[in-house]
Image 1: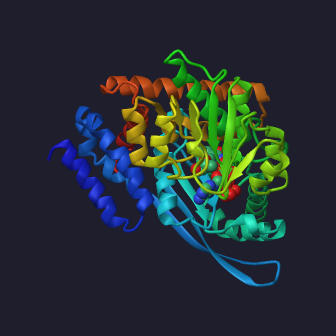
Image 2: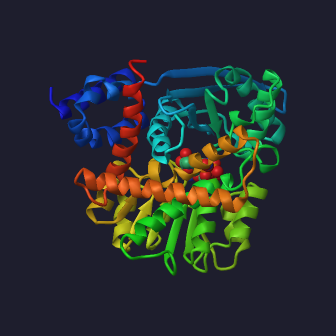
Image 3: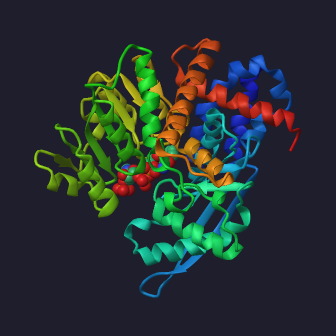
Length: 447
Ligand code: NDP
Protein backbone atom coordinates (compact mmCIF):
# COMPACT_ATOMS: atom_id res chain seq x y z
CA UNK A 1 0.00 0.00 0.00
CA UNK A 2 1.43 3.43 -0.87
CA UNK A 3 1.88 6.21 1.65
CA UNK A 4 -1.17 8.26 0.75
CA UNK A 5 -3.40 5.16 0.85
CA UNK A 6 -2.04 4.32 4.31
CA UNK A 7 -2.83 7.84 5.50
CA UNK A 8 -6.33 7.71 4.04
CA UNK A 9 -6.82 4.38 5.74
CA UNK A 10 -5.69 5.74 9.10
CA UNK A 11 -8.06 8.69 8.75
CA UNK A 12 -10.99 6.45 7.73
CA UNK A 13 -10.36 4.30 10.79
CA UNK A 14 -10.26 7.38 13.03
CA UNK A 15 -13.63 8.56 11.67
CA UNK A 16 -15.14 5.09 12.10
CA UNK A 17 -13.88 4.74 15.65
CA UNK A 18 -14.86 8.25 16.76
CA UNK A 19 -18.27 8.84 15.19
CA UNK A 20 -19.77 12.31 15.41
CA UNK A 21 -16.57 13.92 16.74
CA UNK A 22 -16.39 16.57 14.02
CA UNK A 23 -13.67 18.74 15.56
CA UNK A 24 -11.41 15.72 16.14
CA UNK A 25 -11.89 14.64 12.52
CA UNK A 26 -11.08 18.18 11.37
CA UNK A 27 -7.90 18.36 13.46
CA UNK A 28 -6.73 14.97 12.17
CA UNK A 29 -7.49 15.91 8.57
CA UNK A 30 -5.36 19.00 8.97
CA UNK A 31 -2.37 16.97 10.17
CA UNK A 32 -2.40 13.59 8.43
CA UNK A 33 -2.11 14.59 4.72
CA UNK A 34 0.78 16.91 5.63
CA UNK A 35 2.70 13.84 6.85
CA UNK A 36 2.88 12.23 3.43
CA UNK A 37 6.37 13.47 2.46
CA UNK A 38 7.63 12.71 5.98
CA UNK A 39 6.39 9.14 5.92
CA UNK A 40 7.70 8.65 2.40
CA UNK A 41 11.14 9.53 3.77
CA UNK A 42 10.64 7.36 6.89
CA UNK A 43 9.00 4.06 5.91
CA UNK A 44 10.05 2.64 9.29
CA UNK A 45 7.32 4.77 10.89
CA UNK A 46 4.76 3.18 8.61
CA UNK A 47 5.95 -0.28 9.66
CA UNK A 48 5.70 0.72 13.32
CA UNK A 49 2.16 2.05 12.68
CA UNK A 50 3.07 5.31 14.38
CA UNK A 51 0.23 7.27 12.75
CA UNK A 52 -2.42 4.73 13.76
CA UNK A 53 -1.09 4.70 17.33
CA UNK A 54 -0.91 8.51 17.48
CA UNK A 55 -4.58 8.77 16.52
CA UNK A 56 -5.68 6.56 19.41
CA UNK A 57 -5.40 8.24 22.85
CA UNK A 58 -3.45 6.26 25.42
CA UNK A 59 -6.29 6.75 27.90
CA UNK A 60 -9.68 8.55 27.98
CA UNK A 61 -11.37 9.36 31.25
CA UNK A 62 -15.01 10.48 31.43
CA UNK A 63 -16.60 11.11 34.81
CA UNK A 64 -19.63 12.50 36.60
CA UNK A 65 -19.19 15.83 38.39
CA UNK A 66 -22.04 16.29 40.89
CA UNK A 67 -22.21 19.47 42.97
CA UNK A 68 -24.73 21.67 44.79
CA UNK A 69 -25.53 25.20 43.57
CA UNK A 70 -26.23 28.26 45.73
CA UNK A 71 -29.96 27.48 45.80
CA UNK A 72 -29.29 24.01 47.19
CA UNK A 73 -30.10 22.32 43.86
CA UNK A 74 -27.98 19.33 42.82
CA UNK A 75 -26.24 19.86 39.46
CA UNK A 76 -24.58 17.20 37.33
CA UNK A 77 -21.85 17.94 34.80
CA UNK A 78 -19.58 15.71 32.76
CA UNK A 79 -15.79 15.81 33.17
CA UNK A 80 -13.16 14.65 30.68
CA UNK A 81 -9.44 14.03 30.55
CA UNK A 82 -7.91 12.60 27.40
CA UNK A 83 -4.33 11.42 28.00
CA UNK A 84 -3.26 11.32 24.40
CA UNK A 85 0.45 10.67 24.15
CA UNK A 86 3.29 10.39 26.68
CA UNK A 87 6.22 9.63 24.35
CA UNK A 88 7.98 12.90 25.18
CA UNK A 89 6.94 13.44 28.81
CA UNK A 90 3.97 13.55 31.19
CA UNK A 91 0.63 14.38 29.57
CA UNK A 92 0.37 18.17 29.44
CA UNK A 93 -2.53 20.35 28.32
CA UNK A 94 -5.23 22.58 29.72
CA UNK A 95 -8.70 22.13 31.15
CA UNK A 96 -11.59 23.86 29.39
CA UNK A 97 -14.81 24.72 31.25
CA UNK A 98 -17.44 25.72 28.69
CA UNK A 99 -20.98 24.45 27.97
CA UNK A 100 -19.88 23.29 24.49
CA UNK A 101 -17.26 20.85 25.82
CA UNK A 102 -17.69 17.26 24.66
CA UNK A 103 -15.39 14.31 23.96
CA UNK A 104 -14.75 15.32 20.34
CA UNK A 105 -13.62 18.81 21.34
CA UNK A 106 -11.34 17.49 24.07
CA UNK A 107 -9.84 14.98 21.60
CA UNK A 108 -9.22 17.64 18.96
CA UNK A 109 -7.45 19.78 21.54
CA UNK A 110 -5.48 16.83 22.91
CA UNK A 111 -4.41 15.71 19.43
CA UNK A 112 -3.17 19.22 18.55
CA UNK A 113 -1.40 19.40 21.88
CA UNK A 114 0.84 16.40 21.08
CA UNK A 115 2.44 18.20 18.12
CA UNK A 116 2.49 21.62 19.78
CA UNK A 117 4.27 20.30 22.86
CA UNK A 118 6.78 18.46 20.68
CA UNK A 119 7.56 21.68 18.80
CA UNK A 120 8.59 23.43 22.02
CA UNK A 121 11.46 20.95 22.44
CA UNK A 122 10.52 20.55 26.12
CA UNK A 123 9.78 17.23 27.85
CA UNK A 124 5.98 17.23 27.69
CA UNK A 125 3.48 14.78 26.24
CA UNK A 126 -0.01 15.72 25.04
CA UNK A 127 -3.35 15.72 26.86
CA UNK A 128 -6.41 17.88 27.37
CA UNK A 129 -9.51 17.92 29.56
CA UNK A 130 -12.45 19.89 30.78
CA UNK A 131 -16.14 19.86 31.54
CA UNK A 132 -19.43 21.09 30.09
CA UNK A 133 -19.64 23.54 33.00
CA UNK A 134 -20.13 27.27 32.48
CA UNK A 135 -18.30 29.25 35.17
CA UNK A 136 -19.56 32.55 33.72
CA UNK A 137 -22.99 32.52 35.30
CA UNK A 138 -21.80 31.12 38.63
CA UNK A 139 -20.76 32.62 41.96
CA UNK A 140 -17.25 32.08 43.32
CA UNK A 141 -18.67 29.60 45.85
CA UNK A 142 -20.34 27.59 43.08
CA UNK A 143 -17.16 27.56 41.00
CA UNK A 144 -15.26 26.36 44.07
CA UNK A 145 -17.68 23.50 44.76
CA UNK A 146 -17.62 22.47 41.11
CA UNK A 147 -13.80 22.49 41.01
CA UNK A 148 -13.63 20.47 44.23
CA UNK A 149 -15.98 17.82 42.87
CA UNK A 150 -14.11 17.73 39.52
CA UNK A 151 -10.74 17.26 41.25
CA UNK A 152 -12.06 14.68 43.72
CA UNK A 153 -12.34 12.32 40.76
CA UNK A 154 -9.54 13.61 38.52
CA UNK A 155 -6.79 13.61 41.17
CA UNK A 156 -6.23 9.85 40.94
CA UNK A 157 -5.11 10.25 37.32
CA UNK A 158 -2.73 13.19 37.88
CA UNK A 159 0.79 13.63 39.18
CA UNK A 160 3.81 15.80 38.42
CA UNK A 161 5.37 12.89 36.47
CA UNK A 162 2.08 11.58 35.06
CA UNK A 163 -0.39 14.22 33.93
CA UNK A 164 -0.17 17.97 34.52
CA UNK A 165 -3.22 20.09 33.58
CA UNK A 166 -3.36 23.88 33.20
CA UNK A 167 -6.00 26.46 32.20
CA UNK A 168 -7.86 27.02 28.95
CA UNK A 169 -11.20 28.66 28.11
CA UNK A 170 -13.08 29.25 31.38
CA UNK A 171 -10.19 28.10 33.58
CA UNK A 172 -8.00 30.90 34.93
CA UNK A 173 -6.17 31.60 38.18
CA UNK A 174 -9.36 31.33 40.29
CA UNK A 175 -10.21 27.85 39.02
CA UNK A 176 -6.58 26.64 39.19
CA UNK A 177 -6.50 27.76 42.83
CA UNK A 178 -9.61 25.77 43.78
CA UNK A 179 -8.43 22.73 41.81
CA UNK A 180 -5.00 22.80 43.46
CA UNK A 181 -6.51 23.24 46.93
CA UNK A 182 -8.63 20.12 46.50
CA UNK A 183 -5.73 18.11 45.02
CA UNK A 184 -3.62 19.02 48.04
CA UNK A 185 -6.41 18.08 50.42
CA UNK A 186 -7.22 14.65 48.99
CA UNK A 187 -3.60 13.61 48.38
CA UNK A 188 -2.07 15.29 51.45
CA UNK A 189 0.77 16.50 49.22
CA UNK A 190 1.88 20.01 48.25
CA UNK A 191 2.85 18.83 44.79
CA UNK A 192 3.36 22.16 43.06
CA UNK A 193 4.24 20.64 39.69
CA UNK A 194 0.89 18.88 39.31
CA UNK A 195 -0.90 21.95 37.90
CA UNK A 196 0.47 24.95 36.02
CA UNK A 197 -0.94 28.44 35.71
CA UNK A 198 -0.75 28.88 39.50
CA UNK A 199 -0.48 32.38 40.96
CA UNK A 200 3.14 33.48 41.43
CA UNK A 201 2.79 33.61 45.24
CA UNK A 202 2.56 29.82 45.62
CA UNK A 203 4.40 28.06 42.85
CA UNK A 204 3.34 29.89 39.70
CA UNK A 205 5.74 31.27 37.15
CA UNK A 206 6.16 34.87 36.19
CA UNK A 207 5.02 35.44 32.60
CA UNK A 208 2.75 32.34 32.48
CA UNK A 209 -0.38 34.54 32.40
CA UNK A 210 1.07 36.56 29.53
CA UNK A 211 2.80 33.68 27.75
CA UNK A 212 0.29 32.55 25.13
CA UNK A 213 -0.58 36.05 23.94
CA UNK A 214 3.01 37.29 24.07
CA UNK A 215 4.24 34.14 22.35
CA UNK A 216 1.71 34.46 19.53
CA UNK A 217 2.83 38.02 18.85
CA UNK A 218 6.47 36.98 19.00
CA UNK A 219 5.84 34.23 16.46
CA UNK A 220 3.98 36.67 14.20
CA UNK A 221 6.81 39.15 14.48
CA UNK A 222 9.24 36.45 13.29
CA UNK A 223 6.96 35.69 10.33
CA UNK A 224 6.73 39.38 9.41
CA UNK A 225 10.50 39.71 9.68
CA UNK A 226 10.98 37.12 6.91
CA UNK A 227 9.32 39.65 4.59
CA UNK A 228 11.16 42.64 5.97
CA UNK A 229 8.11 43.85 7.97
CA UNK A 230 7.44 44.75 11.61
CA UNK A 231 4.50 45.36 13.93
CA UNK A 232 5.48 48.99 14.32
CA UNK A 233 2.74 51.25 12.93
CA UNK A 234 0.51 48.38 11.79
CA UNK A 235 -3.20 48.02 12.35
CA UNK A 236 -4.16 44.76 14.08
CA UNK A 237 -7.42 43.02 14.98
CA UNK A 238 -7.58 40.40 17.72
CA UNK A 239 -10.65 38.27 18.41
CA UNK A 240 -11.58 37.35 21.96
CA UNK A 241 -10.93 39.32 25.14
CA UNK A 242 -9.82 36.53 27.44
CA UNK A 243 -6.38 35.52 28.61
CA UNK A 244 -4.78 35.01 25.21
CA UNK A 245 -6.34 38.06 23.54
CA UNK A 246 -5.58 40.51 26.35
CA UNK A 247 -1.87 39.71 26.47
CA UNK A 248 -1.59 39.59 22.69
CA UNK A 249 -2.98 43.14 22.66
CA UNK A 250 -0.50 44.17 25.35
CA UNK A 251 2.46 42.85 23.32
CA UNK A 252 1.30 44.32 20.00
CA UNK A 253 1.05 47.74 21.65
CA UNK A 254 4.51 47.31 23.19
CA UNK A 255 5.88 46.65 19.69
CA UNK A 256 4.27 49.78 18.29
CA UNK A 257 1.25 48.23 16.59
CA UNK A 258 -2.34 49.43 17.11
CA UNK A 259 -5.07 46.93 17.98
CA UNK A 260 -8.36 48.44 16.76
CA UNK A 261 -10.84 45.63 17.50
CA UNK A 262 -11.47 42.78 19.94
CA UNK A 263 -14.53 40.68 20.84
CA UNK A 264 -16.33 38.22 23.08
CA UNK A 265 -19.10 35.73 22.34
CA UNK A 266 -21.70 38.56 22.29
CA UNK A 267 -20.06 40.80 19.65
CA UNK A 268 -17.06 42.98 18.94
CA UNK A 269 -15.83 46.51 19.57
CA UNK A 270 -13.98 48.77 17.17
CA UNK A 271 -11.80 51.44 18.74
CA UNK A 272 -9.86 53.30 16.07
CA UNK A 273 -7.72 55.08 18.68
CA UNK A 274 -6.42 51.68 19.76
CA UNK A 275 -7.83 49.43 22.50
CA UNK A 276 -7.40 50.94 25.97
CA UNK A 277 -5.89 47.92 27.69
CA UNK A 278 -6.38 49.14 31.27
CA UNK A 279 -10.09 49.59 30.59
CA UNK A 280 -10.33 46.22 28.84
CA UNK A 281 -8.66 44.46 31.78
CA UNK A 282 -10.95 46.22 34.21
CA UNK A 283 -14.06 45.20 32.25
CA UNK A 284 -13.06 41.58 31.49
CA UNK A 285 -10.69 40.56 34.31
CA UNK A 286 -11.91 42.57 37.32
CA UNK A 287 -15.62 43.10 36.62
CA UNK A 288 -16.12 39.96 34.44
CA UNK A 289 -18.53 41.95 32.22
CA UNK A 290 -19.43 41.80 28.52
CA UNK A 291 -17.27 43.54 25.89
CA UNK A 292 -20.18 45.95 25.24
CA UNK A 293 -19.35 47.53 28.63
CA UNK A 294 -15.99 48.58 27.14
CA UNK A 295 -17.72 50.54 24.37
CA UNK A 296 -20.08 52.15 26.90
CA UNK A 297 -17.12 53.43 28.91
CA UNK A 298 -14.85 54.47 26.02
CA UNK A 299 -15.71 57.56 23.93
CA UNK A 300 -15.48 56.79 20.20
CA UNK A 301 -15.55 52.99 20.57
CA UNK A 302 -18.39 51.20 18.78
CA UNK A 303 -19.94 47.87 19.76
CA UNK A 304 -21.55 45.55 17.16
CA UNK A 305 -23.61 42.51 18.06
CA UNK A 306 -23.84 41.47 14.40
CA UNK A 307 -21.27 40.81 11.70
CA UNK A 308 -17.69 39.73 12.16
CA UNK A 309 -14.64 41.33 13.71
CA UNK A 310 -12.71 40.02 10.72
CA UNK A 311 -14.56 42.48 8.46
CA UNK A 312 -12.62 45.28 10.17
CA UNK A 313 -9.67 46.30 7.92
CA UNK A 314 -6.27 45.34 9.32
CA UNK A 315 -2.77 44.31 8.28
CA UNK A 316 -2.43 41.58 10.90
CA UNK A 317 -5.25 39.45 12.34
CA UNK A 318 -4.84 37.26 15.41
CA UNK A 319 -7.84 35.00 16.13
CA UNK A 320 -7.58 34.36 19.88
CA UNK A 321 -11.07 33.20 20.94
CA UNK A 322 -12.18 29.72 19.87
CA UNK A 323 -12.25 27.02 17.19
CA UNK A 324 -13.67 27.71 13.71
CA UNK A 325 -14.33 31.40 14.39
CA UNK A 326 -12.57 32.55 11.20
CA UNK A 327 -14.39 31.02 8.23
CA UNK A 328 -14.18 31.31 4.45
CA UNK A 329 -16.13 34.59 4.34
CA UNK A 330 -13.91 36.11 7.01
CA UNK A 331 -10.79 35.04 5.11
CA UNK A 332 -12.13 36.58 1.89
CA UNK A 333 -12.82 39.85 3.74
CA UNK A 334 -9.37 39.88 5.32
CA UNK A 335 -7.64 39.30 1.97
CA UNK A 336 -9.78 41.97 0.31
CA UNK A 337 -8.73 44.43 3.02
CA UNK A 338 -5.06 43.66 2.47
CA UNK A 339 -4.18 41.49 5.47
CA UNK A 340 -0.53 40.41 5.45
CA UNK A 341 -0.33 37.93 8.31
CA UNK A 342 -2.75 35.78 10.30
CA UNK A 343 -1.59 33.80 13.33
CA UNK A 344 -3.73 31.52 15.50
CA UNK A 345 -3.61 32.47 19.18
CA UNK A 346 -6.58 30.16 19.71
CA UNK A 347 -6.65 26.47 18.83
CA UNK A 348 -7.92 25.79 15.29
CA UNK A 349 -9.78 29.14 14.95
CA UNK A 350 -9.44 29.09 11.15
CA UNK A 351 -11.56 26.66 9.15
CA UNK A 352 -9.75 24.60 6.47
CA UNK A 353 -11.47 26.71 3.78
CA UNK A 354 -10.20 29.91 5.39
CA UNK A 355 -6.63 28.59 5.58
CA UNK A 356 -6.76 27.68 1.89
CA UNK A 357 -7.84 31.20 0.93
CA UNK A 358 -5.15 32.83 3.05
CA UNK A 359 -2.43 30.57 1.65
CA UNK A 360 -3.57 31.12 -1.96
CA UNK A 361 -3.40 34.87 -1.38
CA UNK A 362 0.17 34.45 -0.05
CA UNK A 363 -0.81 35.72 3.41
CA UNK A 364 1.63 34.56 6.10
CA UNK A 365 -0.26 31.98 8.15
CA UNK A 366 0.90 30.81 11.59
CA UNK A 367 -0.97 27.66 12.74
CA UNK A 368 -2.00 27.46 16.39
CA UNK A 369 0.17 24.50 17.26
CA UNK A 370 3.18 26.70 16.55
CA UNK A 371 1.92 30.25 17.11
CA UNK A 372 0.29 29.63 20.50
CA UNK A 373 2.87 27.19 21.86
CA UNK A 374 4.23 29.86 24.22
CA UNK A 375 1.58 29.07 26.83
CA UNK A 376 2.43 25.43 27.24
CA UNK A 377 6.14 26.16 26.89
CA UNK A 378 5.95 28.51 29.87
CA UNK A 379 3.92 25.89 31.74
CA UNK A 380 6.84 23.53 31.20
CA UNK A 381 9.13 26.28 32.54
CA UNK A 382 6.82 26.51 35.57
CA UNK A 383 7.28 22.73 36.06
CA UNK A 384 11.06 23.20 35.88
CA UNK A 385 10.94 25.91 38.55
CA UNK A 386 8.68 23.74 40.75
CA UNK A 387 11.02 20.75 40.44
CA UNK A 388 13.96 22.93 41.48
CA UNK A 389 11.91 24.79 44.15
CA UNK A 390 13.08 27.94 42.41
CA UNK A 391 11.52 31.07 40.93
CA UNK A 392 12.93 32.97 37.99
CA UNK A 393 12.37 36.68 37.40
CA UNK A 394 9.83 37.93 34.88
CA UNK A 395 12.65 39.01 32.56
CA UNK A 396 14.40 35.61 32.75
CA UNK A 397 11.19 33.74 32.03
CA UNK A 398 10.13 36.02 29.21
CA UNK A 399 13.57 35.64 27.63
CA UNK A 400 13.19 31.83 27.74
CA UNK A 401 9.71 32.16 26.20
CA UNK A 402 11.03 34.38 23.41
CA UNK A 403 13.85 31.92 22.70
CA UNK A 404 11.39 29.01 22.49
CA UNK A 405 9.14 30.94 20.09
CA UNK A 406 12.08 31.88 17.88
CA UNK A 407 13.15 28.23 17.82
CA UNK A 408 9.63 27.04 17.00
CA UNK A 409 9.45 29.54 14.15
CA UNK A 410 12.84 28.47 12.76
CA UNK A 411 11.95 24.79 13.07
CA UNK A 412 8.65 25.24 11.19
CA UNK A 413 10.34 27.22 8.44
CA UNK A 414 13.31 24.92 7.93
CA UNK A 415 11.08 21.83 7.99
CA UNK A 416 8.73 23.36 5.41
CA UNK A 417 11.74 24.14 3.23
CA UNK A 418 13.09 20.61 3.65
CA UNK A 419 9.82 19.11 2.39
CA UNK A 420 9.63 21.47 -0.57
CA UNK A 421 6.93 23.90 0.70
CA UNK A 422 8.66 27.16 1.63
CA UNK A 423 6.58 29.52 3.81
CA UNK A 424 4.10 26.71 4.61
CA UNK A 425 4.20 26.96 8.40
CA UNK A 426 1.32 24.50 8.78
CA UNK A 427 3.19 21.78 6.96
CA UNK A 428 6.39 22.65 8.83
CA UNK A 429 4.66 22.49 12.23
CA UNK A 430 2.91 19.21 11.53
CA UNK A 431 5.97 17.52 10.07
CA UNK A 432 8.43 18.77 12.70
CA UNK A 433 6.12 17.94 15.63
CA UNK A 434 5.39 14.51 14.19
CA UNK A 435 9.07 13.68 13.67
CA UNK A 436 9.94 14.37 17.30
CA UNK A 437 7.09 12.25 18.63
CA UNK A 438 7.57 9.46 16.08
CA UNK A 439 11.24 9.10 16.89
CA UNK A 440 10.46 8.72 20.60
CA UNK A 441 7.57 6.30 19.98
CA UNK A 442 9.66 4.13 17.69
CA UNK A 443 12.49 3.99 20.24
CA UNK A 444 10.10 3.08 23.08
CA UNK A 445 8.69 0.02 21.31
CA UNK A 446 5.07 -1.02 20.83
CA UNK A 447 3.45 0.41 23.96
P1 NDP B 1 -10.62 32.69 28.02
O1 NDP B 1 -11.72 31.93 28.63
O2 NDP B 1 -9.74 33.51 28.88
O3 NDP B 1 -11.18 33.64 26.86
C1 NDP B 1 -11.87 33.12 25.78
C2 NDP B 1 -12.35 34.27 24.92
O4 NDP B 1 -12.92 33.73 23.72
C3 NDP B 1 -13.42 35.10 25.57
O5 NDP B 1 -13.36 36.42 25.09
C4 NDP B 1 -14.70 34.42 25.09
O6 NDP B 1 -15.85 35.24 25.09
C5 NDP B 1 -14.33 34.03 23.69
N1 NDP B 1 -15.09 32.83 23.28
C6 NDP B 1 -15.06 31.62 23.88
N2 NDP B 1 -15.90 30.77 23.29
C7 NDP B 1 -16.46 31.48 22.28
C8 NDP B 1 -17.41 31.18 21.29
N3 NDP B 1 -17.96 29.94 21.22
N4 NDP B 1 -17.73 32.14 20.40
C9 NDP B 1 -17.16 33.38 20.47
N5 NDP B 1 -16.27 33.72 21.39
C10 NDP B 1 -15.93 32.80 22.29
O7 NDP B 1 -9.75 31.60 27.20
P2 NDP B 1 -8.28 31.72 26.66
O8 NDP B 1 -7.99 33.11 26.27
O9 NDP B 1 -7.39 31.03 27.62
O10 NDP B 1 -8.33 30.78 25.37
C11 NDP B 1 -8.66 31.29 24.08
C12 NDP B 1 -8.18 30.31 23.02
O11 NDP B 1 -6.76 30.13 23.12
C13 NDP B 1 -8.76 28.90 23.09
O12 NDP B 1 -8.88 28.37 21.78
C14 NDP B 1 -7.69 28.12 23.83
O13 NDP B 1 -7.76 26.73 23.59
C15 NDP B 1 -6.45 28.75 23.24
N6 NDP B 1 -5.23 28.60 24.01
C16 NDP B 1 -5.14 29.06 25.30
C17 NDP B 1 -3.98 28.93 25.99
C18 NDP B 1 -3.81 29.51 27.35
O14 NDP B 1 -2.68 29.52 27.85
N7 NDP B 1 -4.85 30.04 28.00
C19 NDP B 1 -2.81 28.22 25.43
C20 NDP B 1 -2.97 27.88 24.01
C21 NDP B 1 -4.14 28.04 23.37
P3 NDP B 1 -16.94 35.03 26.26
O15 NDP B 1 -16.27 35.51 27.50
O16 NDP B 1 -18.11 35.84 25.84
O17 NDP B 1 -17.24 33.55 26.27
